[in-house]
Length: 231
Ligand SMILES: *Cc1c(COP(=O)(O)O)cnc(C)c1O
Image (cartoon, rainbow, N blue to C red; front, side, top):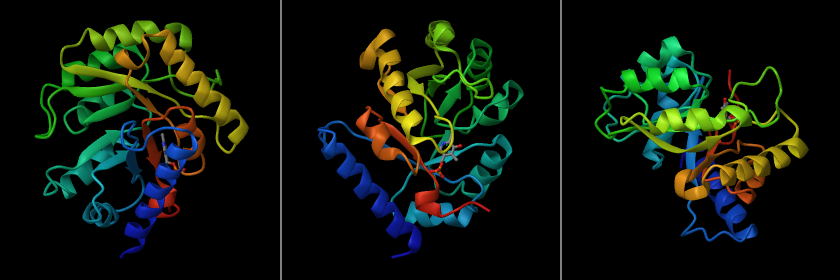
């Protein structure tokens, strides 16, 4: 097995262990693994794909565009856009991504809807998560909890978009903060219709995926633990 295949298997084992440790049934309450491939070459993605991985996360519109072109023979690959998205890049991302994790304004939601009319073969509507700024840090992207409902409504109003849930990112290197931010995101979901309206919670990275799964994550975004450190 390649290094990437071994690491993927390790991450799957961590996910399953975290699911059972937190009393979630690994078969019914699925957690999907998004392999974050930013700043790793297309060959690394091919290796993960060969090991069965299909969902890949990218942070930068141009990098997504060039990798999607280089890997267009992998017809069932599923691109997740997970970086901060400037409105003027919606036209690049919307026709490629299956899911955007980082919608943080009504304006961006509308722009994605306008640009999502062309789509990859394995997608109909563009799935959307709304990024919430739970900690209130000024430098973080994401919509404030007070403005969340307005953005959710804007996504639901666009027939070409499909509202899937919420995403958040804790401050770097602070596991105690991460724990409380993840559980706050789960509470915020409950204030806005719960799992029936917002089935997915995108939270958890290489260092804190167990905390996120414990708090109810359904999408974990894992880079370093699969691909190694970034250049
Ligand atoms: C880079 C990145 C990740 C992956 O982080 P790792 O610590 O390498 O697992 C996850 N989510 C977002 C939004 C990122 O930018």
